[in-house]
Length: 170
Image (cartoon, rainbow, N blue to C red; front, side, top):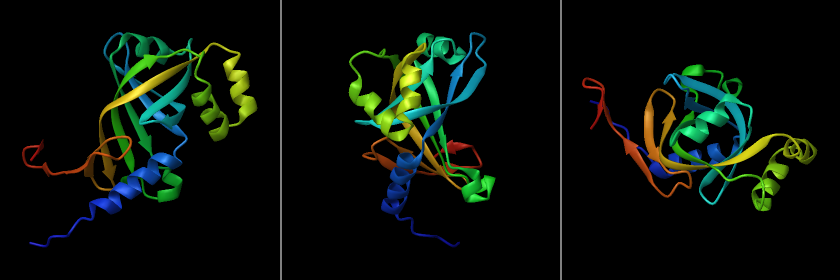
């Protein structure tokens, strides 16, 4: 049997770079019938939490308001990897909380830096609300199913061994 030493620090560094460079996340919530509903939304990261700015008339808004947990997927650009099977992705389970638009100047300044400040000014004049997503657990997947349990700030980073025969974590 061939074995390969895994450098967890290398993957941890890769994970942190991956989180930093992403602008859009795929947000997954469940609708009133329990069916998954996904869409892309801009996000910023601050103090180990993700913040998304979402329209109050979007279907996601009501699902986030009425659900304790949401799934968040961050995916590498397939144009960059040229191989959809080797796409890096991070799957995070988050609790969502609407924190409104007042008193969050620090968060909005991060949006202004990451995106166009004029665009964000227009959004703030519309019916958008700021949600704070607190990761409760995460899974970082590299390429062909190699997985790591992670936290958003990288403090917790453990390799996951999967028993393919029983489809369970060993």
